[in-house]
Length: 233
Image 1 (cartoon, one colour):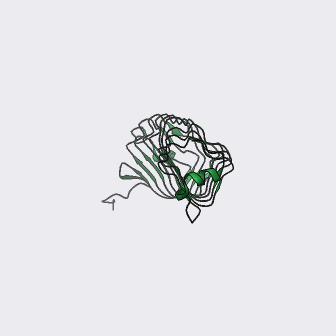
Image 2: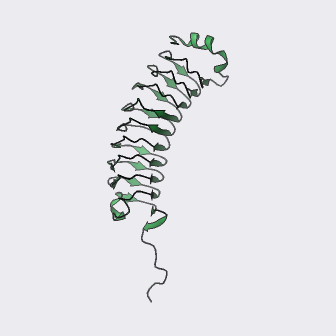
Image 3: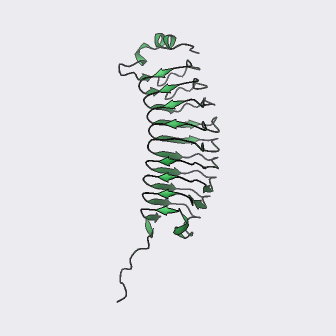
């Protein structure tokens, strides 16, 4: 089903439109297209809308956007605006995200099988979490992340070529190809590394330009250097 107007969509799914301005279209697999120029005053749930092929142009969401299991979406328009957080999972058609994607809250993506790069001009209001994006090769962002940056299980990603200001912690887990970590970045919190074999042998001083917290690798603090248990007299 292809909807050209919000009125048609409301007529088809009256119970989806909530009093707080949110719209819940969870599981509506018959929807193929949504109307352009749509302003959603609350949260928009497109979870398991498996028939949806694209997001509408000039979609403006004041709340959060839930795109879990939207497996047929092949394109996200450059003018998408999300006031709170955005979640995208289980999609093998998206190879990139909008270059100037702006998210008021956190961005959480996982299981995007063909995502090759993150947008350089991404703007977020809180955390960025990237997981199980096996073809991701480039994370070259230049931005401030007020919260945490977490990346895990991205098999082909070799480096974080980024100049970022991370307000909290940088977390890297199960990254078999990762060889270099954010050498031009400022990390206000900790760097937590687990199951990244190539990083275990690197001098921690090269992990980032400035680290205000500690560095832990596989559960052990490696920087600043731990005090000896029996200091010399």
